[in-house]
Length: 404
Image (cartoon, rainbow, N blue to C red; front, top):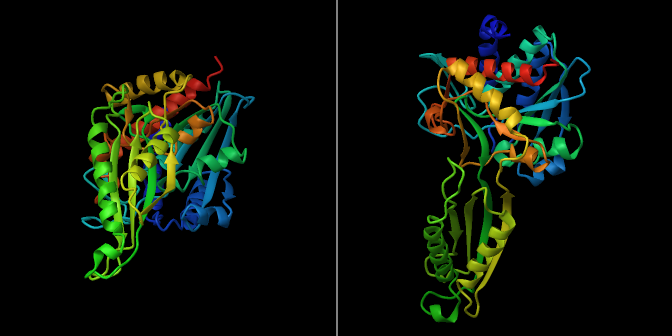
């Protein structure tokens, strides 16, 4: 019950602070130490923690160094159905510059905790763990299973976390709730396509540029085509509130040999955000065709390599079972309207939905990522939002597992 959460809130705050103090930056993605610390803390709370280490070859394939997924299973009553998975990720983007607080200090000031991962999403390690402890403290009338899926590769796409747990048949949940913010139930989000575009030409002396094939000139034609496409995308709008339009951004460019040499190779990386109405594979084919049409001159060759393709999270049949109680209990605890919407990001929650599991995002945090400075300097979480989210999750799980 919620009085258990009130009585144990100092413990919950201490648990979160201990997690923030252990760096888990991704990149470089060496997250095993954080997983072990989290497991130790969870065991101290009385949980049995199963560790699932991802093979090193697979970890390296996705550009990380070490991944250990943590799974906790608590059965109530007969414990057969429903099985509800709660997923939060412990990896976080590097702190960067501009902080006024130690990013690993877990400083508490003005009713908030500051630190990298405080809002996204070490907070929901705490939210979900202490909601589950509250169920264990008062288990009467409950029937079903709650699983905590604590993973460490959301910043790298979730392939080593949720997807690994599902593909290896470590878990087969009926429903999934993934890390989110307290003031909205998220039922959809964007997907993303990352492409590496390599423009090949032939080097030549700058005094005789016509004797070569200028890869930079060809890359300029590619960029013109891409920025033309970006303008067209503004006219396309998702029907899901909160999503907006597809986006296209060229984020990295490198190449050339020297100032006095015609460039023989230019490499670019681009990010194409997919709205839920789009199909990633179709977008990829069309975008590659556009890029390769941009310059067909003799001596120029263009290659496109997929870095990542993450399909959007789309509202799936059955999510109403999760959405309705989250809205109701959220409104009670926060004394405000709880939105149901999409967000223009992408998360590893999509792996649950892709496996046919009704999935929403809900957890501790403010109304938006900007409000929390998530992925920015001085990331923080209000303690009031942490407590409210824990109560909302506990009440929702209790309702879903009620045998009455």
